[in-house]
Image (cartoon, rainbow, N blue to C red; front, top):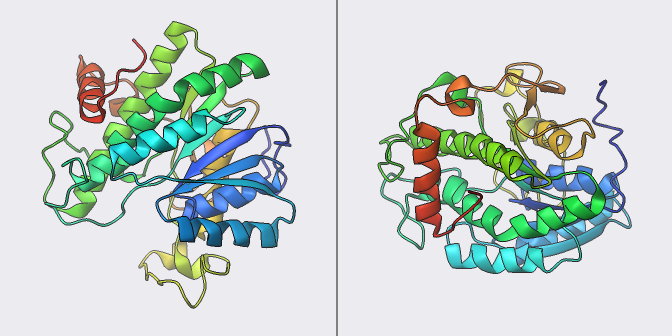
Length: 309
């Protein structure tokens, strides 16, 4: 279908949660979903920043229906509390798993002793999915269309092969650790969709990647992207996009009526462009042997949860 990010399908009546919603791609995804009529649950670790994000969205989308949930992805206890709050909503039609620490030294760990990148980008999301899956399934049954879990990945997964045999073995470079975490994320997302289909659960698991979003091309938002917030230089700026347009792929995965579980959305260009259906990486979508099962088992054990069998 022809997709216009400026004119999304009406989301009135849907409740969608976004993690990492106080900055960057997560913030703009939340703003766009709110503008389309959704009730949006902003989730992030700082209550103060959540209020700033809420105020900014209300400034640009008067009358937006917004709620907030504090969640620290570096703490499985915090994730469990957030999952309880999200599950207590009268409905939950979808969740965008966007949050995660973007910079970390090799030996930095979460509250639970996990490598920081793997813990916040992969393990915490597995725990969050386990906690909210019953609520998503109930919304899917009541609404007649599958609820959606949208996982955020990265183009680095396509470019580089990261080891996932041992998810606690952290690569030396931060970018390699990030790629490892996103590789595990993709493998989990595709395996989750296979299991959801097999079980008949009315929930779709979809992957998205944003391309490259940079501060220099991002619209101003009070307290989100202005003179008071940290500015990050990026050598790809001439070829990149703002973080508002970098949110498009995830937003389409959540709102496109024709989107299906197991699909992958990304920008039409290598770094930017309209959100389109792209070919998944065969290594993560259809891993050889029992690799998907082994990654799944590791993630369940690290998150202390048991998911779809």
